Image 1 (cartoon, rainbow, N blue to C red):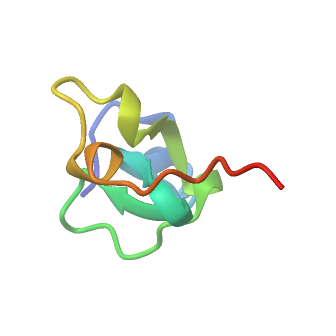
Image 2: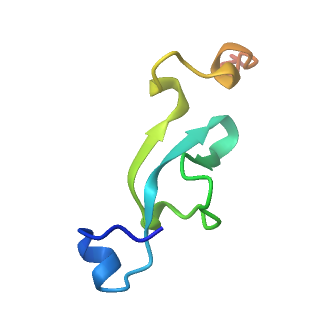
Length: 69
């Protein structure tokens, strides 16, 4: 989607206007439903799913990954 006031759109720089949400296991998801390339470099905003308002289901159902030897 091209934004009329976006300098990156005007310059034809490959980018996304959505926010990249990174889930457990480093699985990315973009808030822009038309985004097909989930590279970090294409997104201005990248957040951890635990920081999303209301939380994320994958953080509440994750197994305990801290183990002692």
